Length: 126
Image (tube, rainbow, N blue to C red; front, side, top):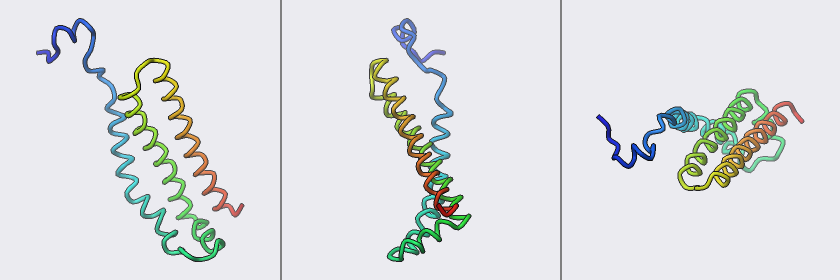
């Protein structure tokens, strides 16, 4: 039994039979961000108002550094998947779509790499 109209069958429109992995990845990253946000912001809230060196030492602790790196990786992946859905849904035209998807990938990657580099620099005392 087909749920497509005659016009959809002729045009080849319908389910792409793809995209489930993006949806699942988006949900998993959203769930993972709940504890990561809490564990990432908690040292900042505890050290709010203290000097720079105290805050640097807090984020230099291995547990906080690992949480920070996981936080930035997960945020960048979540952002990439979320913006990709918006771009695919609302940007029409092959060239605009490809450029927007490339810009999305570049922006999310730069954000993730910058965050990981920052946390690593703090953790290794640079």
